[in-house]
Amino acid sequence: MNEAPKISTGVVDLVLQAGWMGKTVLLALLLVSVFCWAVIIAKHLSIGAAIRENVKFLAFFWQSKSIDEIFVRIDEYAKAPIAAVFRSGMKEIRKLSGGQPAFADLEMENISRALSRASNEEVSNLERNVTWLATTASAAPFIGLFGTVWGIMNSFQNIGASGNANLAVVAPGISEALIATAAGIGAAIPAAIFYNYFLNKIKRVALDIDGFNQDFLNIVRRSQIMARGSKEA
Picture 1 (spheres, rainbow, N blue to C red):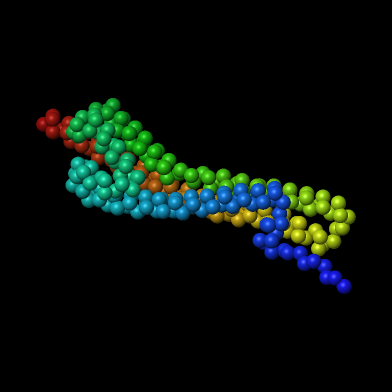
Picture 2: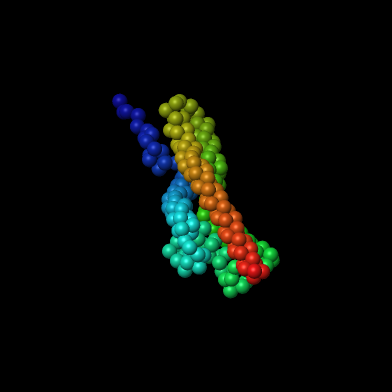
């Protein structure tokens, strides 16, 4: 008596046996997942470096005796977003009055706008590609669900064509279809976790930059008041 052929139900076998639509969905999810992990690794390194360099720059900033001394050594903190904002503010100061501390009110507004522009640019650089993680977290499960629905439809069509609805016939097709849902969820979970993680880190950097902007403007205003007082004296 001949034995019934064994049906391969391993994950790899089910993927290989999937139809063209199932393989397309799985390939798309694989590419999305690979890109997401590339973004995760890159952002983990860049945001971590930005936070560490900000701490070092702020320590140097408050320990320095003059703003000119800081500006001379600014290139040592190339990875610090706050250093980039400081550089932008100093360039605006030097454009306005040759680096002198006496500024008109309108000039102070120009410095504030320069700091704001630089701040927005630095935060935007940190946010680059992070939204891809949010998109993956929301879209990947639906892409996987589409592959599942397509696979289940094919399974029922095969059942109708063969007239056989035994579990041994139905199970492999359903398992093959559900792999797409599993793949979608597998791509979405790390994307959602790291999106929220990076968003909180970027908010921290943005708050540090905003605090520095206020401190820097206060320093310039104090220099302005001192310069006016010395002139009046």
